[in-house]
Length: 212
Image 1 (tube, rainbow, N blue to C red):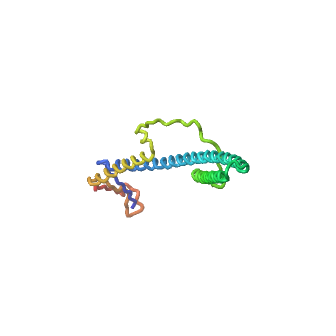
Image 2: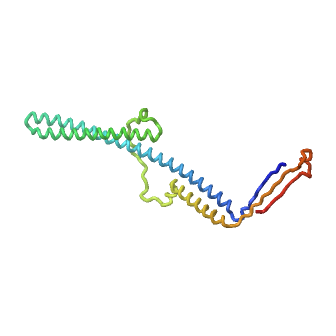
C-alpha cells in the first residue's frame, strides 16, 4: 500500500495570525537590538576619539607650561646668585615645575590608554594602531536647547522594547485563543492492493477523512 496523509485547520479565531504577528514582532525587535549595538559602538568610537583629542590639547598646554617654568627657573637662579631673591623661591619654582611635568606624563599615559581603547573599538591591534596628533574641530554644529520628545522614538533600544511589548501582546492573545475549540481536518489518500499487478488499478484507490 501507498498512502499519503494531509491535515488542515481553519484559523477560525485568528490564532495562527497572532502567532505570525508575534514572530514578526520578535524578529523586528532583534533587528532593532542589532541597530542599538551598532549605534552604541559608533557613539563609543566618537567619545573615545574626542577624549583622545582632549588629552592632546591638555598635553600641549602642560608642555607650554613646562617651557615657561624652565625659563622662570633660569631667571630665578640668576637673581638668587645675584643675591636678589632667597633660595626658597628657587625651590618653590622647581617644585612647581616637577608638578607640571608629572601632570604632563599622566596626560600622555591617559592618551596612550585612550588610543588603545580606540583600537579595540575599531577592531585593530593596539600595537599597530596609531592616531596622528591633531585638533578638535572648531566649528561644531550647535544643538538646540529644546528637543522634541518624539526624538526618543528614534532610539533603537526604545524601538526594540516596543517591538517586544507588541510580541508579548500577541503571545497573550495566542494563550487566550488556545482555550477556544479547534477543528482540524485530517485525511488519507492512497493505493492499497494485496496483488502488485492490481496496485495501480482504479479499484485499488483508498481515501478517508476525519474531523477531529
